[in-house]
Each structure stands twice: as C-alpha cells, then as structure tokens.
Length: 101
Image (cartoon, rainbow, N blue to C red; front, side):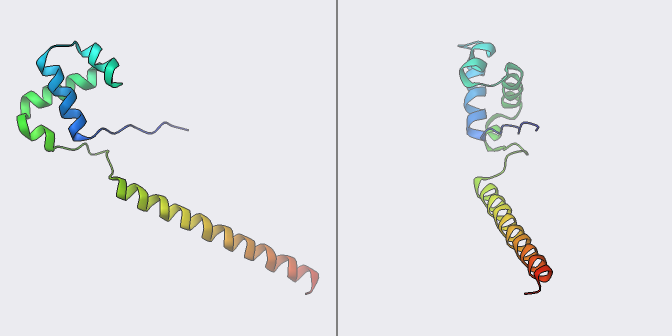
C-alpha cells in the first residue's frame, strides 16, 4: 500500500523557512531537527523570500482540515456498517429460503 503524503501547517512552514533565512543552522541541520527533507526547506525559504508575509497565509493544496478528515472517516464507517448489515440480511434470507422456514 502506498504511503500517505505528510502535510505541514502554514505556521510550521513559516517557522522553518524563517529559521533557514536567519542562517544560524544549515538546511541539513534544520531538516534533521524537523524531520523534513532539506530540499523542502529550501523551497519554503525561497517562497518566503519571494512572497514575504503572505507566505504564512498560504496553505498547501494537499492539506485537508481535521474536520473534513473526520467527516470522511465517519462516512466510511457508516458505509461499512450499512454494508455489513445488508450482507447479514441477504445471508439470512438465503438461509431461510433454503430451509423453507
């Protein structure tokens, strides 16, 4: 099964990019500290330098809000329960029709 992409909040991106712009630590040091690839930090840094304060307001397209994820999870659970109930009902109908009850 394929692994799910990780998403980072805009605040996290901004914080890491700001540390990279300050230049106190190398990109490799920041990457190992935050668990992110150095190229990703370099992209965030370039984006921060290009867009300035607007950068912190930008959210990645791949991020879903926790509310959306919870709603999708509930919907999947409801569908699974409904499928199980229908499967059991069909099984019982077939069993009773075979026995003549």
